[in-house]
Image: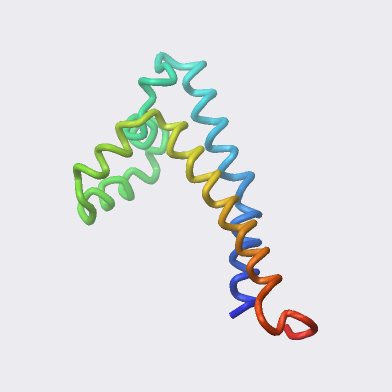
Length: 109
């Protein structure tokens, strides 16, 4: 279990640059397109700029509570992406500290 948690933590850390790229991409789109930071919502970001995977957007709406999704997709795109980046990084650092202190961490792995 310890090695799985450590591997998951490293996975979260290694995907941080990809998430940071999405944050920078959404901010760049706000500056270079007709959309502003506040009008480039998650809905517009998915439908206009992630067209190859729009089917995921439609699938999510068929499975989850629509009012909840309207709340998150109605926010400026950079906000939830940044929150996800910060949360994933925090969880990864916490998992690494947690697994370091797990019982049997000395010499067993």
